Amino acid sequence: MSLPEEDLTCPICHEIFSDPVVLSCSHSFCKRCQEQCWDARLRECPVCRKKSSKSSFPNRALKNICEAVVSRRELEAVEERLMCPLHREKYKLFCLEDKEPICVVCQCSKAHKDHHCSPVEEAAMDCKDKLNESLKSLQDKLDKLKMIHKSSADMFKHIKDQAVETQRLIRGQFDQLRQMLGREEEARLAAVKREEEEKMAAMNHKMKEMAAEVLYLTESIDVMRQLLKEDDMVLLKKCKDHEDSMCGILIDVTHHISNLKYRVWEKMLEHIDYTPVTLDPNTAHPCLILSDDLTSCHYEDQMKYCPDNPERFHVSAEVVGTAALGSGSHHWVVQTENNHDWLLGVASSSIPRNIEVNARPENGFWTLCFRDGEIKAMTSPPRALVTWRTPERIKVHVDYDKGTVKFWDDDTDSLIYTYEHTFGETLLPYFYTQSGHPLRILPERVLVTMLRQ
Image (tube, rainbow, N blue to C red; front, top):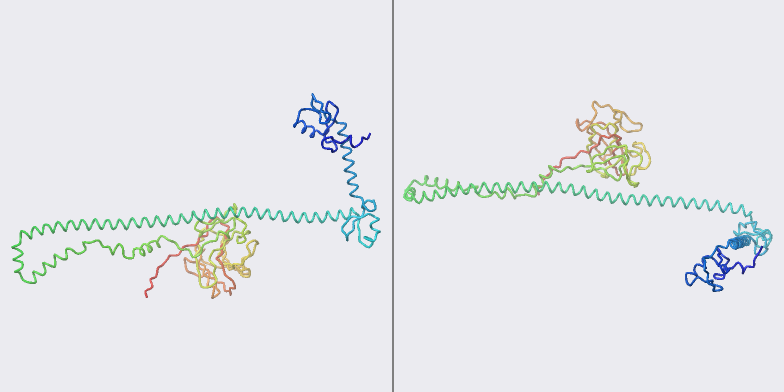
């Protein structure tokens, strides 16, 4: 059964019915159109204006017919798109040169006669393959960008955490200096106060003596007149004894003030450590735990979060120092004690950080290794070294200009091993350990030398 198209058209929107409903007057409308009309006016039919005492009812039969008409129209539209408008033939071929679908008649025409063509199905398959390849490439780029975004967000948070922690450490060290200066200030002020009290007490005592002496002199004018008649030498001696009794009665200002800043600074040196090498936390493997003052490190199985920056060691438990050695002579002492798994020495600044590399001179490493109770020089191949004791403090001495790296037992001052090499780039102090016992860089005593001109 077919109905004229005007019988399938909503009188309000003039489109094919969508979800049609029928009123009591038998007129039909799209449900949405009917509801919009009733929202704006009384419940009456938009066509005949009769009042509807009841709600509308779904018109299922009309809905089925309309859906069939819409489906047929969509199918005809699809078939029309698949039809050559010139020859009214279905597209069955795809011109590979003009990149367009054609029919069999188009293939024989002048426009496509000498062109390479393929069946539409094959061309579609090739197109899908290319699209899938492009899609995969775009998805890979998106995944990489997401990883970079996440890494950047993590690094942003790590930078803020680093700043907060560094500020805390700086404040802590300055608090220690302020406390020490405060104690020194109080001690020196107390010393002045004590001397003031001592000198005031001495002065009071002296004034009492002088008052007694004035009284005595007043009562003994005759005696003094007799004194003037004494021998000259006796007279001079008694006058000098009186002047000496007034020496040293004033505050020794020079003792308290002279070079005060220098003497306080000199005393501060007794409480301040200088470490020739400090560790760079931005290079430390996530399993290495560094001390707050960056002078020691030890190993933990649990990896902490660290940003994936290019300077960081990602494969093994390594870290380098901040001091770049490009000339001159340098040395530092590392306390190993109970740590029985370590490598110490220097490494080229360009060594890779994201792959495993043997610590050998040809790879830019000049190190000493202690493992399984044996000390080895990490040459190629490694060379076992005979020592009469297990060193607990290793001194690393680098003379860049002479091209030597020497390792000493610092407790006995005995040479363990010497590397000789002509260095072509800057070196960095190098540390490796897989022990929970720390490797500690020892501080050096600061000496002050006065230069007089």
